[in-house]
Amino acid sequence: MAIRFDIIRDGRDYWATADNGPRFYIGRRVSYEGRVGLYNIFPGSPLQKLDYDPKNYASQFGFWVQFINPTAGCEGRNFLTLNSYDRAGYTFGFGQFAAHVPDGDFVRWFRALLARPEAADYFADLSLVNGRIHGAAGPLETAGSTAALMAYFNPAPDKLDDAELWAAARLIHWTANNRPARLAQIAQMIESFRGYMGRADRRGLIDGQRAAACCVIADLLHHGRGGRNVWSSVSRALASNDPFEALIAIGSTQWAERKATLRRLILADPQMQARRWSASAGDFA
Image 1 (cartoon, rainbow, N blue to C red):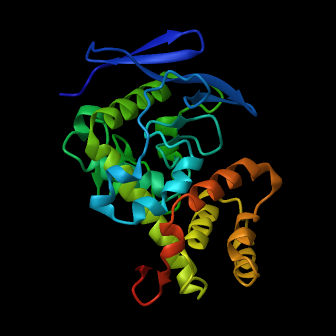
Image 2 (spheres, rainbow, N blue to C red; image 1 turned 90 degrees about the vertical axis):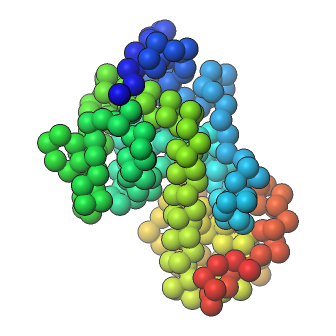
Image 3 (tube, helix red, strand yellow; image 1 turned 180 degrees about the vertical axis):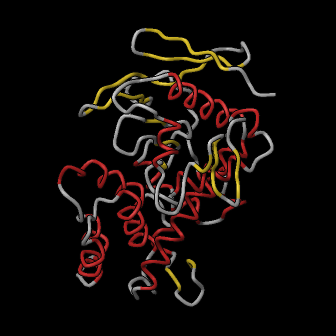
């Protein structure tokens, strides 16, 4: 039976209950460049602290949980992170999966959730048909567009509406109360980062490179701060006297805080220096 969610407003803050249970925090209303939506990671936020910690998942995923950790630290780390006020329409999770990218990390992660047995408790109106997310009126995403999926989660970008709040409540409650839902985020993050390494490897750039340098490349691709010329920037950095620092430097000064966080977390993990990418194995050795 589908879980009943009720929304509670308290000024700019929104909470929810599930089947009349204890209330839990969803997020705060915010305006940004003509858009209106939710966010829930800010100083003093009452959001449940449910942070990604790689040591809790190493037995299942190996070194990859360490490899994604610096980017997780840059993205807020909380499995319940949400924002719906920027051009992505909806982002969720400790890796900030974004709904605006066809066949992107949000879409693939949400497909994995809808394949789970408890999906009908949370999103009874959605299903998977031939591997695609469908609503009552048909497909919500294709290889070329996620416009319908974005509209499902965030129907009106210039206001905060009920559908947006209910979607937030369902995603947060599901993730907070179901370990497999959190594992789905980790699995998708690793899949995405493996994909980034594959793209770099096919360009002949990373065979023998330390995981530290590879992690910066992955974060550049995940975050998008390298722009359209990211691969030429990466090639130049790898050919420099200090590839790691040159890679960290890519991107405008507006990302200085992110780059500093990324650098600190990579340097804090000795495995990032010990492990190297092996093109023949397609993995770190």
